[in-house]
Image: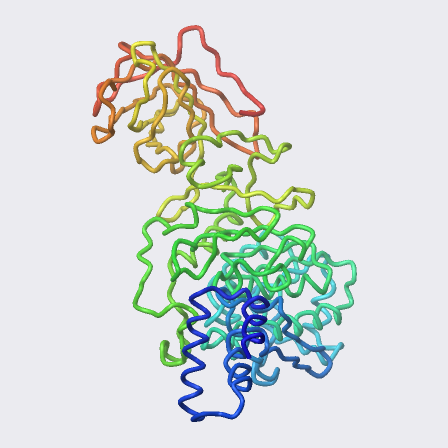
Length: 531
């Protein structure tokens, strides 16, 4: 008996807490069965609920089979694998989305009959060179708002074939059941793609939440050119092997937007899953989002948690598709992420370079394809209200010797005024938090400002706020700034103007005060290719 227990502990990588839970189950089973003749039978019954001994194989006519092996189990991150529902219960449907044929402006959703190759909508799907497949999230449906918005946007700019995957019946609580059903939905989508006659089509999958992992399952078994994962679901997927979740190997190019990975209640994840992973606002609480805690965590959500037809509220989780839709609509403002090791380093101004050929920056959107990109993480900020996209500026400040050489702690606020009287307030990537830096070195930071963009700057008003709470006995409360260099960061137009600004009067900025900078005498606007 103890040999079996030791083997179980080793094979299942059991922690002390899990072993304690296992002991509790032994006690419960003993109480239920009295004193069984074989403790080994109790052991097997208890271990089955928390180890991978509950694996299964489910087969579906004309689709194939689904199996769970050791890879699909982890006692902490994926402790349960339910058997998926029957495909006729899940009722996966495919809708071919086309432009409105009348003046109502309402998109047409035509059901695709995959069993009838002569079906009009089915045959139309294979005619266009670009096929885009949209896959909804847990507790959602194939006609949800973001699917309509992104389809409408994409149909305005080009004429792709767009299919919405509707698996609403299989996406209902409990969460663990929907997670298992997702694999069946992927088999249905693979079958559809194989049936289409357009073998040379460029296949692009866009999935939100659980739909992002369905896209990954499809790409794992069928050739896919691009996948966009909109805040892929974290619970039951993060820290799991690539076969279980969305992964860079699932398509030629995988871009992922993370917006909701800040706590154990989050629907998203901080785990990188693509060639480019964008951690927007650090994938923490999105600006102006009041994420509710009135609902239980995903894995505890049951059928009584929501009314029939309700979609689980999640402001930060849903911001992912709002940002993506806006990126598809925007002509000027770019969602540019800066390559960095962590969000903390990005906030500290350690990642300010933008050289596309070196991969130090990237932007997301339906037209972005960089299949040769080494997997990297990118960070950026947005506004709290629409339009969410903000222009980014690389700002470098050169200090006077009077600022001292010791460590400084505080932050700068900046107002920029352009040639046409355009005025905009810019905020540093540290979100106004005090930053520590040495005045002996230039201070470099990415600043963000809402539209309109300011390219040729005629005046800058700079405010210094000294952090009086910092432990620094010799720090000066004033700063002396000799020069401010400002350049808009753009991937569409890398030769943006670099503005050299000098103090109009004194270079001293007292804490809490503004001073004015104008164009340096003799300076000329220069365009630079990189930063």
